[in-house]
Length: 439
Image (tube, rainbow, N blue to C red; front, side):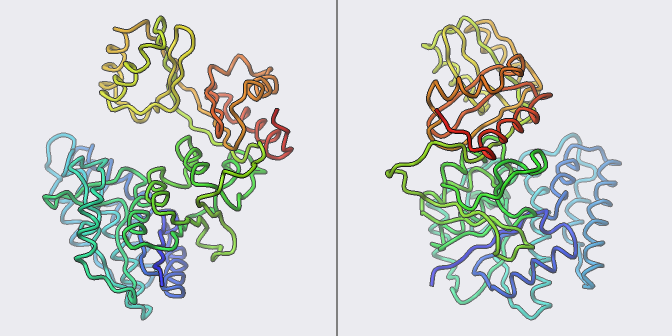
């Protein structure tokens, strides 16, 4: 029988009550593989630890200790953090920011603790789940903080592990190791990616992503109150939503599942498989109605204009972005202007100035900050009539819409960050709730 992979996110492990629910799920369903994130907030604290001075680092160690000990106490178990705290204490006198392999080692502590803790609680319940060290499974290059998996090495390692299909294993998300056995990270949110890679290696029949929400919604319910749960999405639809702001799934996790046609089920730990969203390969060869299925918003975007740059230098702009290791949200070329967006959180001041300088050699460069990228995802969205229809619906907000990009499955608008929630609420009302006909 094909394996099943369960992944539990940090918010689903944030309290002793949640952990008890998670352990109930594991013990009742006995999945072949369990992948866990760090307890909510711990990775942020570990990241801050790497940038602090000695006094600040001591305070962060205390916060990390107290957060875990509160949960451990509420669980009524004896569980020691000593080994991991010793690692943190060994870096108290480290001069400057902690980077590279040292930073990866420190940020991995959150997942190291949570995997051991959940495994310990399962054992206390009489379920003999075995610990599977992620560093033996997820083999990557040496880009320590955003590593790329080495699939060939991973397959070779997997075969040598001799894992039993009759047993259950728990492992850390987010982390791996390079060929020198140094800890590496798959990037923030990478626990989803870990689960998908293990699903691919084990030829799993499905991946279940347990989180604090019931699945994927037509829009973030915290922004749009009447957002609806979506029963099913194609891989491509979910990829667009995840890339353009929906935070339910980490975008790279979709790649292994798409390669191996492994369905994903997103649900809440409190739903117990009743409600959720299925994500899988869908047949698009048959007739498919034009409609908007969901929307997403990505805030804190910088909008770049390169004026006087013809479309012939678009490849050069893309090359500059690649050289600066900057991934644009959208990029368009119209008349003598190339326009693209970047996530302000992903660009340091040094990279920002390098990018600005290199682009200035092509044309005049202007930027608009505090923008938001709104993306409508569905089908039949590529027509000029569709764009006209959307802009007419938003004519009173036209001064706050700066540019757009569209293809068959998505239509993106770059808008003023201040008006983003208002605009996306109007679009959700017209195209999702009222199901406005797309022209």
